[in-house]
Length: 273
Image (cartoon, rainbow, N blue to C red; front, side, top):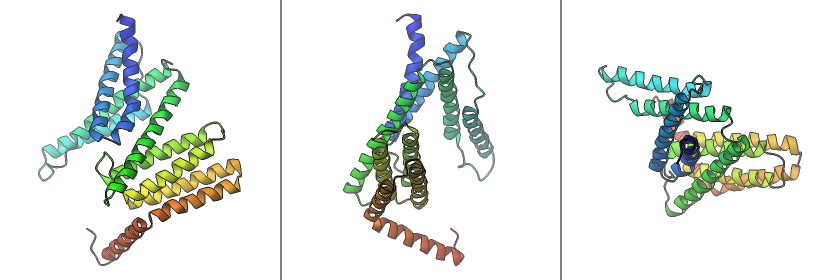
């Protein structure tokens, strides 16, 4: 490999590992974490190459700086907790380190985007592909877990609440991209399929806040789509299928509602633990 090939090698490694993180993380969290670290290392090497070539790399992007500031807060609190009595367990060095690595990744990827190293349409297509693969693999795994176990689904993350929030964020992002895509015959089909399956999977997580928030967001996006298409039949079809998805999870909804009522009565009696 010549020097030019090596220079072009690291941007591709950084970007491809970045879009591979989500599809892997929902199946095997450790695998996603390893890819995240590799992406950070490739980005760091890529930034070093850019500095060596005397190319200007913007490190003041607001989205990237948000991660850096959060990392500094985590590290600062951990330093305080380390030397303060009664707070020895409240340390977040690992979280702080990951936020700082995320800052490096974002700074480098945004630099590549601004300098047109990648074709912007290719970036969009690969990003949509990453979200679509994440939706397909995680939804399939969730349905498999629901068939083989009566417990709350946790996917590869192994924590039901975190699984619910992460899955909801990914599927809502995918639905938003579908809504923003150019009008095609399959646009409504994609919207319908992702919405119904994601609602069903969210119900399987049995996370009350995610169940409510995800449903409300889907309703908002459904009416947003209706405002552009004015198709009453399609709107009615979506509503019916959403009720069907909720109906399949009737026992889950009933159980979580009962738990919520019991928690409320317990709180009224002075038990706020």
